[in-house]
Amino acid sequence: MTDSLLSPPAAARKRAPLQRPIAWYLRQLSKFMNVLSDEELDRLVPHLSERRFEPRQFLYSAGDPPERVFLLLKGRVKVYHVADNGKEVILDVADKGDLVGDMAIIEGAERATFARALEETVAVSISWEDFSHLVQQSPKLGFAMAELMARRLSGMQRTFMNLVSKPVSGRLADALLDRGEGREIYLGLTHEELAQTIGTSRETVTALLSRFVTLEAIVPITDGYRLSDESTLRAISNGNIPVSPRHPVREQPSAATP
Image (cartoon, rainbow, N blue to C red; front, side, top):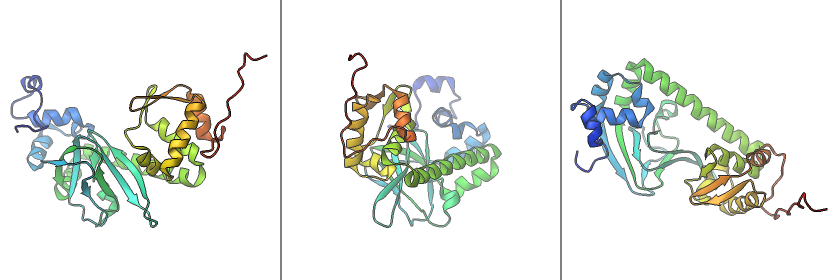
């Protein structure tokens, strides 16, 4: 496949059987593909087709029939719900190696969410009929999908519980902690999109991030923040340190001041 992300590096082709370069690549990319046996992968690969999406292009919309499931090879996709008041609530941001569209397992005959590319995105897709048949025939994949569904439903439940029980500063602190990789927090989202994940406005997110910086909980870096004081950020998350987007944080007196 010329100019295709499904073509693995030359070194990979030397190590893997020539008839299975795509299967090798999918195993490296996704843990879901890694649970499949060689025979199951051999049956799967002919059913895959590569799709490319421009930024802001929809993979599917609410109300669509669940026709295909996507495995991301490149790019990011936001999965979101539109509330009755027209506001978007982001449920998930899928990245390279993630599945998109598999929630049709519990959605029923129609999609309940929208999936839209945040940037140039490449994916392989499989028909919902073929995917559901594969899940039924592979106990390991079925178990992996059950675990994935449980994690997603738990995450959604936590999101909705936070919306009704936590102040917006606590919800934002949670979102930053969830996106942390060691000491680095790479948002991968605009302030508007981050606001959509916690049910608030872009202006509120921008103001609160400034307050968190003033409190020295985080420090701005390229593409995100560095976690400089995790205990402070967790205290904000737990509500032990109230932070208002409307009132600047007062500077604390230095301990060295007599």
